[in-house]
Image (cartoon, rainbow, N blue to C red):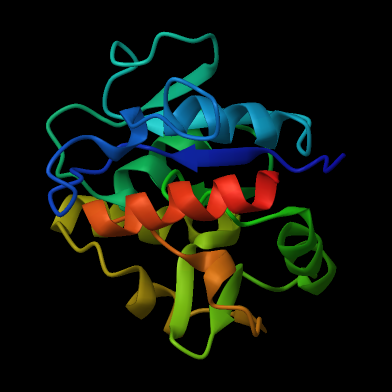
Amino acid sequence: MFAIPCILFAGGKSSRMGEDKSLLPFGGFPTLAQYQHTRLAKLFSRVAISTKTADKFDFSAEFILDPANVDFAPTAGFVSAFASIRDDRIMVLSVDTPFIDKGVFQRLMDADEEGLDAVIAKTAEGSHPLCGIYHRSLLEEFERMLREGDHRLGKLLASHQTEYVEFEEEEVFANLNHPHEYQEALSRFCEQDK
């Protein structure tokens, strides 16, 4: 079990999906958020869900609420996470990436070392800022970004000590942004279950 806390980001707008994707049924669970939380709790000693409101979830979990009156943006989640969790580093994962597994987390952990600000998964299609390790050393920058409405994680990572860990399999990092991607993920999950 990983000692690092894991923060599941579930506070986005889901505008491309047309409905809150964290509440879509998945993997035999009533919601994708509950599926993710349940599986991550088997891998990490502490799992918390970053969200704008906990009211939408009907299962027991630790919730970290975004600051009031801020945009739908991960920067708010990072500021709240570091305020709530005293550890110097956190693993983060977006709720809409249900195929990222223990092997991915292990490789990110193995690449982490003193002096780094972040360790981020990367594939041929690009980096995956919501699959990685972030250090408290970035907190002041996150606070500035939140104040200024700057939510460009890629720019932040490029200007700090970031280690990118290369992965070959794109499918593992599939995001469920659109309805067809959700349907494909359901089919894929059923195939894996056979």
